[in-house]
Image (tube, rainbow, N blue to C red; front, side):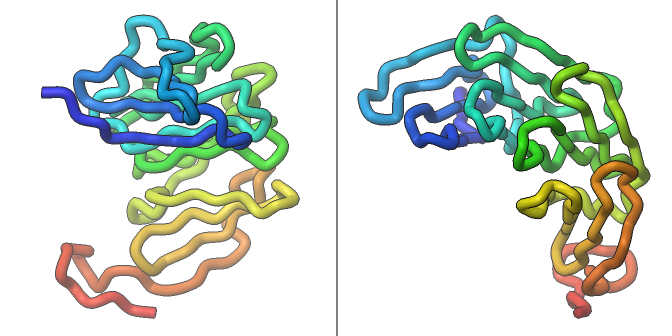
Length: 179
């Protein structure tokens, strides 16, 4: 019954994080395959999203309607966000590791990783938070789904511009994509 749904290499390539349905969250040594840490009794059920911090010291995981953040060296949970309205579709750290951002189809939420507090929440438009990427300077992030991208200013979440039109009306699979 166990299924691997999420894999993520650490930035140095030495660890592989594994999560899924019926699989306790863990990291393994990428060279030897030996387990290095398990993350408590937490399971990452139906998760498709894992993200290492740029320094490799923290691991974020989307678990259905929750996001959890762990210290990789100890397996200690340091943040749990569970008031989400929908399943988390995307999660990533800023290039400097100071922010963690995720989208749940309704809101984009930006957390300060030092204080572990939410610093910004902005409404999503039509479930565009399925993919999130930061610019290398961390000042801008982009959210996207299918063929519609929205560029945001990191500190406020304000949309500065967008590209593409996304799905045709009603957004059903099989509908034409407009650019």
